[in-house]
Image (cartoon, rainbow, N blue to C red):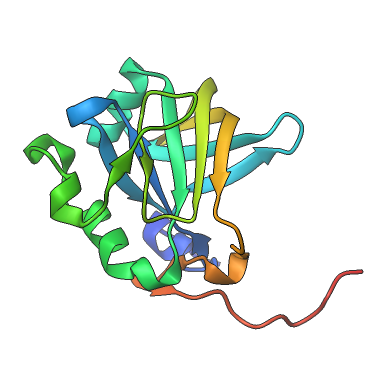
Length: 172
């Protein structure tokens, strides 16, 4: 057994969910593509985002401890890639990435019109894990498009955006 670098280690996992998180408010809000997103609790409903402290959204969440987790459809791969490629430090990002901000119900960061799922969160905990901060937010409101199923979602691994795969066993 040899040493495994972080980049090589991460490639051992088969896939990660892809989300577009939104931090900040108004003209300064920033959509960011993340593959470090996870459900932390069912009751209360908690979702966490892992964000490197060098990313623009990290500072936005520190300043305003709220965020939106939007689940893009697998047909939105280009927009998702663009949201992860352009920095919000370079000016208004929304038109560059082809997404539309819409007012959220309970938090100040906007939701994303084109995404079928938007989860509005308030940060209840944050902790450092090496080169990332995990912001854990309680879901305080949500919008789920009628007819949405996880088959509409997208995952990411090895530089590739993917559609969820085949069922190999159904748990009953």
